[in-house]
Length: 168
Image (cartoon, rainbow, N blue to C red; front, side, top):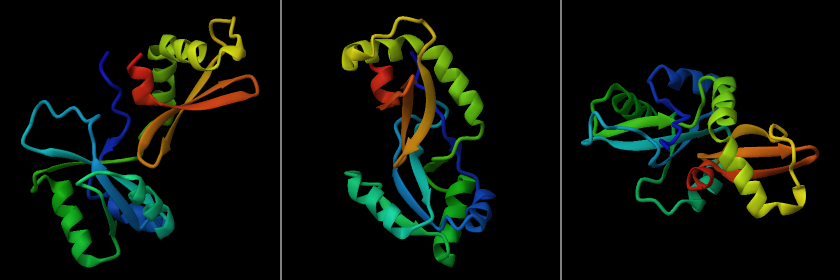
């Protein structure tokens, strides 16, 4: 199974939009979900936007990654560097932890990861005792840059890394 690539390419036009939303802090990290078959010379990097510095710092502290950094896009030098990165003038292929069409992503997950979700629940939440084939309600979420699926069944729910479902 090919892995779902939920995040959008980071384009320079997003920088003013992030500023308007008061999301000035970006946390960078290596990004393994990117399909960069066309250009193996570029390193895929994921940028996760945050409003508050403490949120960015919490994410940064969780990373064990040589590409990890916190950048403040209010700094003109950083903005210029991000524009260069987004324009393709560097060896970085940038992505941003934002989803263009959440409804389409959720529909894709429901259709293509149904069996993996049922298997995960059977192994990890046996007491849920799922009988109806369509009783699980998945929804996509972003948790510190990590794509996760919230699996809901009745009043119960659990967050599972997308990577974990793909490995089943």
